[in-house]
Length: 210
Image 1 (cartoon, rainbow, N blue to C red):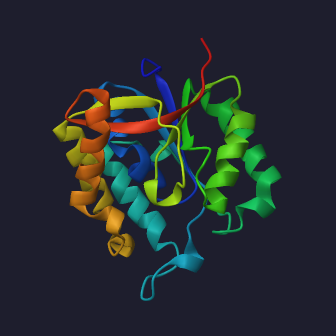
Image 2 (image 1 turned 60 degrees about the vertical axis):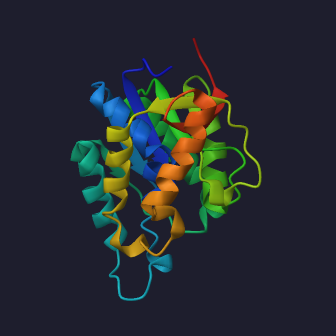
């Protein structure tokens, strides 16, 4: 599945893709894959006090540049944060356009058991839009009461460092515990133990087409 050449990362909010599969993104870019990143909300309503509107989209650009993702491969939408369920059809239609334009061979999306309403909506609509495409659901442990982790991607120290360095670009989010380097590394070590490696990232194997 990782042999796919065209990859699409679906992120409800800026930073979700990096948090869920940042080291895997680093690995894919090192392997010469073409990576696209679509993000669906600038999260203006939830920005901490003192940060300007669309601040997090600026941080997103800086973070994705750490991976070497081309600016023209970053697609930004403006759905209101926490209100995705009201826009299911519009989100589906945007996903269908992405499928037609990008023709991804592998899609990363929030996993099926993510409890955040925006993540749930994007995960569900991704299954509809990309039902003929390989799909992996990434892990955000703070949003999961349960998750079937049945696909693991081994990553190395350099790739994990790239993930951590990208997340440092989110100045507006550094107060969150899961942005701390020791959290990022500890989770990767736990998943690595399961995968027989020093580090790994875990996924839900949602869909396979061969």
